Structure formats: structure tokens, C-alpha cells
Amino acid sequence: GLSLVSCSLNGDDVLIAFGGYNGRYSNE
Image (cartoon, rainbow, N blue to C red):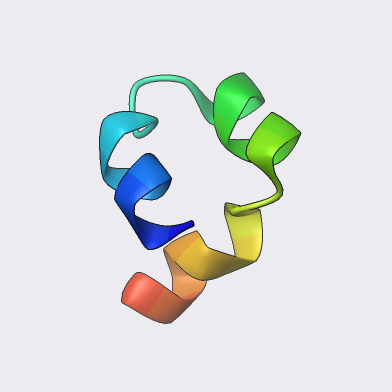
């Protein structure tokens, strides 16, 4: 999930689709 976040920073829609939205905050 975290790996996808890095590649999906430009596309929040894709980020949510993978369910890694929460991982984004965890990475912060």
C-alpha cells in the first residue's frame, strides 16, 4: 500500500481505489 501511495500522489482517485488512503497519513 505504501509503495502505491508514492506512485499515486498525483492521483488521489487511484489512491482511494487501492484503499491506501489511510497509508498516506501513516507515511506522514
